[in-house]
Length: 92
Image (cartoon, rainbow, N blue to C red; front, side, top):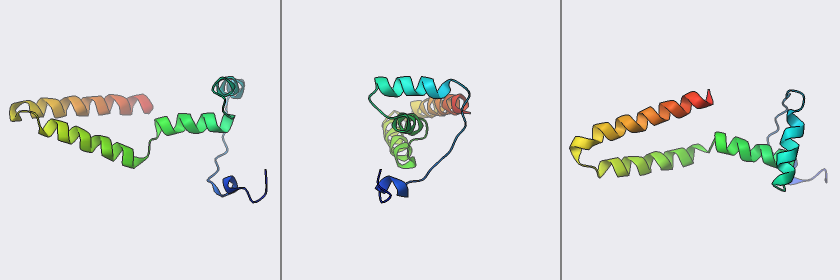
């Protein structure tokens, strides 16, 4: 890789992983025809999507809930909040 490679300008994170985990990641990365780094980026992007995506989803949800009859909106919002709580607890 050239010392002037654009990837050198990207943020870097160094992590320590338990013995054997890097090998497991490498096997999956090879299966997916990706480098270990690319495989980890895919996994991290799934877990930590850009906030704009989340904002877009919330706007979509608000639009859908807004079209429901008024008497159903509170239950719909409760279901949305319950699901968000469940997802938050899964990632903690």
